[in-house]
Image (tube, rainbow, N blue to C red; front, side):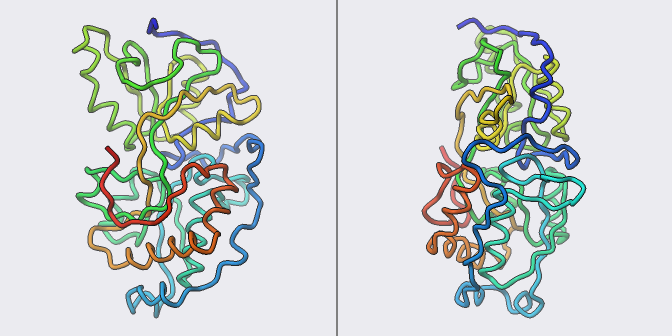
Length: 311
């Protein structure tokens, strides 16, 4: 297959799409209609009750106060987004999982929206007790952060639907000579930058990485042909590609990653959160959440603390 840098025409139909679920934020941008089968307004937590055994795993001071501070990244569906920016009430898979865990543990979560790249450092400073933002579990992150897993997602690629130059990406040499857009501070950016030498080593023109802190800039870049391909979450790209009129084509999975709640290293909160996620799995609420957001193929059978990165 020939690989070349193709300048694509502007298409307004893609204006409401894309990207970076949990890898940036664009709170003012409303998403397009949900794909068929996804029901954002469905109540999937009505039957969830406090589990005393799980709650007993919380530190005594947390049980006494009854609240936790959460730093959460707002991106696009299905992770966390604003269906109505005027109400400033986020919804999404991450939001439902947080709410379910809070009910199991009998806690109130004080949520603060935060830029994706600021959340992990803020855990270490004590600004937040826990962070969410579709954080993939990697060996690099495990050195400074603890994780409690709740889904299996990962890295994928997408292009404009009218781009026929790429049909899949299983090797980064397929990106040689192209301009790749992704989220700043993400595993996607790290992966792309770490392997930028693969094209010169193959005697080919290197790909160019453009990282954006805001979803809107990435979307515009794809629309206007300044980006040839985008790297983001598997679930996020699938969701966008399934939207009627989105004009986005998902190229498939590149690398799977566990996704989890993030905590400062050595946090005493991890056993309780693991027990709470496992409780949601056991009572069926977890499966309802994933079905609601069209992400059932990301289900895990058991939450784990600090699992190794997928090979």
